[in-house]
Length: 320
Image (cartoon, rainbow, N blue to C red):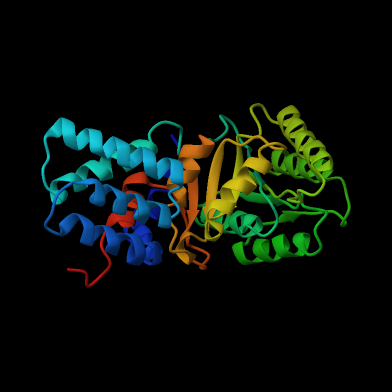
């Protein structure tokens, strides 16, 4: 059984969370699309050009927006649709198709501990994501341990320790400048000895020295795999949604030095360009697994494609 299914209580309000969290994007994109699809008129070149512009403005990405519009044209022709309102469900289905394939649930070990390694450039919300997931798991009754593997950045260890206190979760840490893999090793040994079910590992995010970073991350992965079969069970690449297309540039650069099994998209509530989740899925070929939809400790949510697409396309409150 997947982790999200075991955390079912946290999924009960997922639709409302996406609706509220994507308010800024819905105000921009949803309002524009509502006017475009609900007005009288033809499905002509002007319609498709405006649709493409609206999708690009929401940071769906130029290539993805062009592909969506081309596919919509073809579907409209095939279905013999003549007016914009009838084309709306087709756009929704084409967006949903972008998220098909790839496991969106978080993998877990056959026998504990499950080890997750979080990677990403500094400032994207990596440590905050770890803290919020630790809280969610602890609230569900799981025993969680944090590994302060970002030993390079000033304040990173202390930040993770603060999150550990907030979540009621212990943190394994060493002095700044220590070997990150040694921190992860010690955390895994403690987890095995004391019955912790999850080990969440923070890592450095500096890209100015890719060789050192790659060596660090490769060593962490090797150590985890040696100590726990199948570990790390997830390598989660954390991206900041508010940076839009720059998030993709960061991700492509970071993937040169770190593999990833899935994406965490933070601060999705803080941008009018929430379409970036579509671009991330399309261009990186990785499933979006978690999203940040607010600043609260409970605002880290599992990604749910239908809730996301509905929230993305819905007209803003008060729209005709």
